[in-house]
Length: 127
Image 1: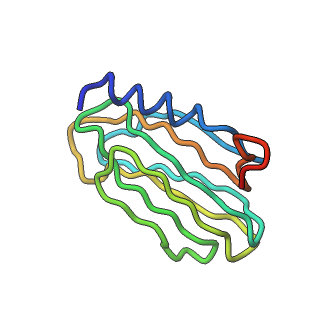
Image 2: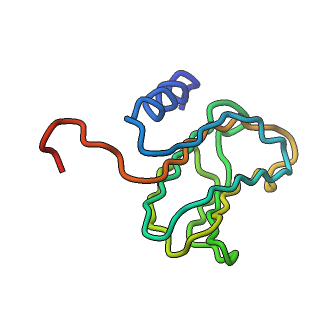
């Protein structure tokens, strides 16, 4: 896919209406590296991770989400983009990591958005 397509998907990713709380960032992930982020979530709250590789070698990364006990409950390999929603089973810190450990020659630029809570409806009366 062309770079214009990557950028279009990134733009659409961040045009989604905001929720009660969100973290977003864009960062460079070097070859043969791993970068982790942490989010505090209250039990019963929905969490949504959206990510997009916007530049780099093959525009792909590995992604993993872990619960507060270190148990992985989402793992995708060599993905360009994805969207994953879950409900927190515990009050504590959840971790998500992006990895390029399978690559030894190029970096990737990754954008992500982590939302906590429910998105408001787009239209009045919508559920």
